[in-house]
Length: 229
Image (tube, rainbow, N blue to C red; front, side, top):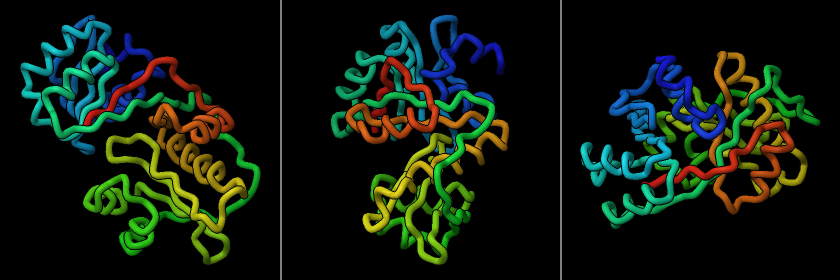
């Protein structure tokens, strides 16, 4: 697989590189101009190319209007998808990736535990941007962690099925105590311990989240990725 990702920008295409490296994808198309794949765990398509016409050609060949979730790196391709998927929504995001060998050291402490299926009601009561089936599968896989003050949960964070960090939530009564930084630092350490690169996608207008990534030492891409779903 190395030949497929060696020319990809490590930061901008962190999700594609991760899928290739962990072997959870089917490569649908590739050339010197780009790559198009299907990530099986998250059931997400990903396409990266600097040639919008080529990307659209690949999407046409694979019935893109039937996709449930796709990330592309060109606004022209995202707009084309919007026309083919009229009921779809588009989310414009920066990619943030942690590219240092050692995890960040959070300023503060929390008890961290792995979330289980018994925590599903708690997660659902505070987070509604992922459907219940995906959350259930993420909990089954051990993808979420919960922070606690003694026995009291204060928030959670996890990895989406396609592997990006996300779902960071600190409950209202516990905000402004640095817990978001602590939760993400623990998740970064966990991912690094597996020999993988922590990364996430941040909605372009989410200034607090972008600031948090920079504080934790993540690098932020200059270009956007466009999620269509």
